[in-house]
Length: 208
Image 1 (cartoon, rainbow, N blue to C red):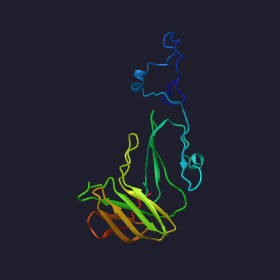
Image 2: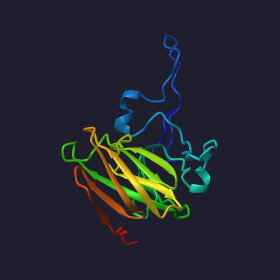
Image 3: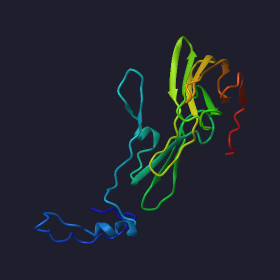
Image 4: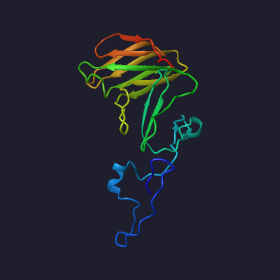
């Protein structure tokens, strides 16, 4: 069936069965894009949390993300700059963009902005290793490109209760390896390729 623009729309009766093809259509599928309809029904969205050493946790209801619109795109980014990843959801068939703020208890984090010189300027393809609290956290930098959306080419890394990062190792796309030490948390850190120092920026949250 096709999904109407809203729940009050009248749907036509099912068409006659095509004996040769063995199927029927409510509408001509080739005209559906122009009519702003699609082949999906109203199905609630699902949100799963990656829990260490455990199965994924279904947090759809608790997060209020289980709206039953026909959502097609989601951008994960820190929209209010509090160090937690939020979700911007876009649905087809009209309706507003929905922004779901992350309300989990605050923990420490660091946001890295890498600037390439010999490498490509956004440093896409870099690998970052954080050394803190006797463990390593490894992240690859890429440009988040969900369907019909785009996120910032940054690394937002949660570090839990750690109050200072002992060392950061960056392997740039050129193969060059760069190390920084004593990195503060809860800050935006700018690191430029081939420079021995990093720039610390205070986090300015948008006005509510």
